[in-house]
Image 1: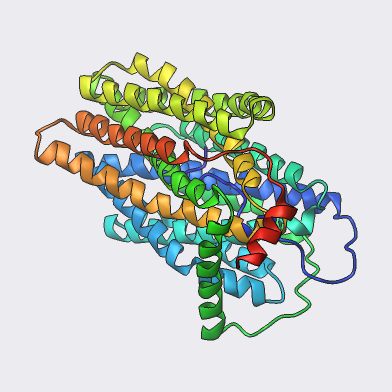
Image 2: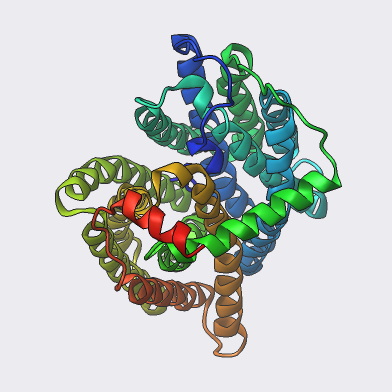
Length: 453
């Protein structure tokens, strides 16, 4: 349930640096790398998805929905712009682990200070902490070749995602442990937990290192940006790939946005239902537990179906499920339905969330030539970051339109904004409809592309 779900980035799929055949990675290095996924999910679930929005509700009331989406969009916009710079730096540096260490340390320190330094400064700290977190994810993904082989890379990456759900459980559990007057400890505890589970990765992962380090300068940044543009243009040579990436903007837009707004939505359902503050938080925690547990089960079930049906059909069914869920959430908000209606919705969201990534990544691989997986997964990651900017902005503007122009309540405004997410999924389905997931003959297609390149 990452706010920013964790598909493999360009670096995740990239090959290891040139050199002699690497020795099998040590088991403790593999375990340490996996633990980092648990660590950063504690941050993404605890800070981005749950407790920062909750704090905003306490200090800003009905303005919390708009402010939350503004801060998320701002931080993701910055990281989207600087991603080519980060990629150029890590590709040219001798080692990547120092970058991960610095970004993690910065994120931990800033997280520990959240809500302790005044309203305006806390907003700035949140933006900076999320930028450091997102940068860390990019550096972390780049270390996957150091703890895996070509034969088990998918399995190791999948274990990281699976343990990430355990991190989500831990983050939500903090809400139970630190109720009432102890809630000020939430962010320091999240920061400490992030650091504790991240330390093994920073200590035990051993890099072979870049045998050809190069200077990090303006030329490197320009070269990295130009390479990204060339890669984007080259998708036209591979049937369905560009259309898939465009469609992915729309459905990840909707999914990232609903994850980031789910806690506030649940709290306002409880408030409208007449529940006290403590009961609102208790119900919210229960609903998140249901959603996270169902996401784990959903990932397993949909993964089986993706193998049997193929990723295109599986993703289509998952997206139809999202249509039903967004329509239901919109109805709950607009009709101001009671808290009991949130439980079946949470179960459905969890199942659909697990299914999205179970089908999304195999679909991408079906459309990508094997010798360009790392290159095109860079675009795949950029699409996810771009959608994390546009989704919150659209949600915020629709919410403000509902409250300011139509005179809706806060919960009704959230319900109206949620219906825009339904529209995004519908657009994605229309874009993806012509795309086929049949296996490609890459040797023949490669020759065709070369003859027309």
